[in-house]
Amino acid sequence: MKKSNFLVVALMAVAVCVGFASCGDDDDEPSGGGGSKALFDASKLIGTWESSDGSYYMEFKADGRCIGGESNSDYPDVYVYSTDTQKGIVTVSDIRSTWSEDVEVTALTGQTLILTFKEDGEEDEVETYKRYNGTKKPWTIDGYEFVNLGLSVKWASANVGASTSFDSGNYFQYGNPSTSRSAWKSDNYSLPMSDISGTSNDPATASMGGNWQLPTLEEMEELYSKCDWYLQTISGTRYWLVVQRGKDSNFIFLPFAGAYPLGTSNNSLLYDNYQCWLMTGTYNSSTRGPWILKGRYTNETTSPDVNITTNEVQAISAMPIRAVSKASGDVTW
Image (cartoon, rainbow, N blue to C red; front, side, top):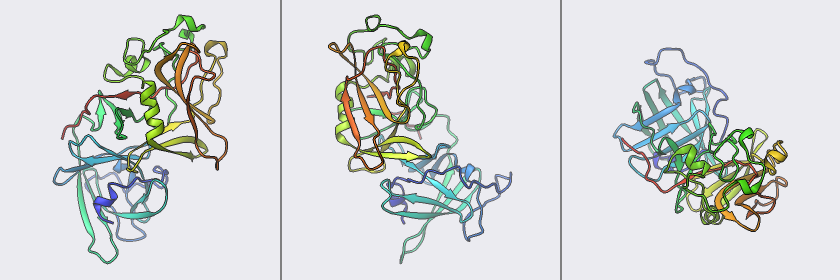
């Protein structure tokens, strides 16, 4: 498989940390493919790599994702990946698991990654990458990673306060930037009764800065209607896999993180691993709360049950948030 194919296909295997094997502490000693007994230290993949001509890069993350694309492009591809250190390969799979293929890790040191792409009946293509040691992370806005889904705004790759795209992150009430439950309001009238996206009452703006904000109702509806939605279960934990229509390698995960529907009136987390609640910054005066995206799990064979609603939602309801931005990415190479 040629490099161009490898870099536009999502890697759908998720056990990135399984099978990591060390080849010693000497970063200058190559390790890698060539036989079934070959080992490489998969932990050395973590970090950012750029092609020898500086035109392309890949960033391998510890949570199993890989981000890659052409340098200075505003259109990164997002992958997940897995490794087999006994065979010396990185496994590549289509995001919908329709096929998979192996790419040989020919060499991997602290500063050099050499990959061999094989194609039946064609000459192998060998590509060399050097570790990028710059201080600015690519595909970020104010230090927060984003994914371009081809929509009117860029979507953050993780919930506000989450360390990875699979984590729940913090829970917020509408118009209340505090993450402390003791600071949650106990009645709807003590919270803003107007649209708040991008204002001082926006928890996303307060947490991530002025280039980030809660999605509006229209922006959340755009995510719902213009992307493809798939239920994923990874190690017993459920997520929505939201894929840019027509471009499988751009996607985000939305965890089924539940909510606190009654705020301080019921301080127990409900619907964890069964419902995904995400807040917008658009207010509904009839329900005295925000419009939200709600995705519900019923069973493994049911089509995605996702809707934009205010049903059961009040301003005092606390839930995760996923921020959006219209700013340009901080990409420097």
